[in-house]
Image (cartoon, rainbow, N blue to C red):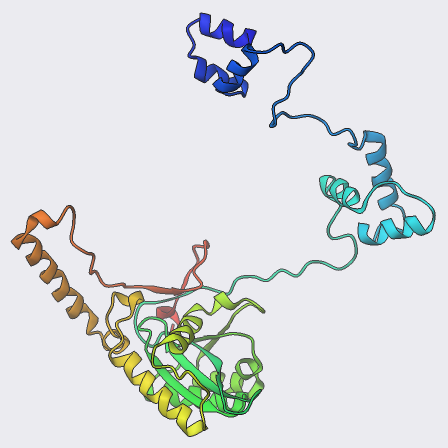
Length: 343
């Protein structure tokens, strides 16, 4: 209070003086209205040393025991119970963890090293049929616990579904057949395509890898147990299963499931206005028609602004074409563009 009074007498503002010393003006007023002798600092956010804080001798004892020959490879969860069996208590398990962490001795304490999972190489597509992603999803059947398996391939640049099939089981033989048919349908040449997937056995089986090598397709895989390394396929499956036309019950037969997916693919590729590609259909972007469509939209918006400028406070909506689409973009500058695959 004396410090604040001195600061205010020197021309400082009381609110800023209170903020600097760590109290509010209301606290200062309350202190001025009561006898504070012997009360001490009662602020809730005051910093103080806990009464049960480990002293330096106890910390050194924890480090000494943890680095002993019989305990140097064990975590605190093993050390503390072992000491208790010997009739010894030094500190709690959390205290052991905290002291070892402060001394950079917590992990790893044995020969086992933590697994490092590097993010997959980033690929950037500047046109159609440069980077594809694919995955398999379950479709429910009328038999509980049994499913049909939907194999689906999508182009990340245009979002077009370039290949799909439904089977009653999963195998790398079925996957390799689907990839071959999709490449033939899209007239893919050797060295032009990157195919990304997760780490399932249909994706990494020997037959599948041999087929990719034979076709000249570059394989790319997600990290284990990381779903967002394959975001385009995951997003496509969500669109498929959350569309209003998706059946509320199971598929009665594999023929029924194929008929429904056939209609979905037709709608998705030809009619669906995709938000990730400026609301044009995947087929329009796949064929390069999106440039003209977006240019026409830009003209419509600019003409509307000229006719009624009072309704526009700034620029018109951005209808510029998205020229590049990246798969798993990272902070690294070495982005591998698919245009250099053939070279």
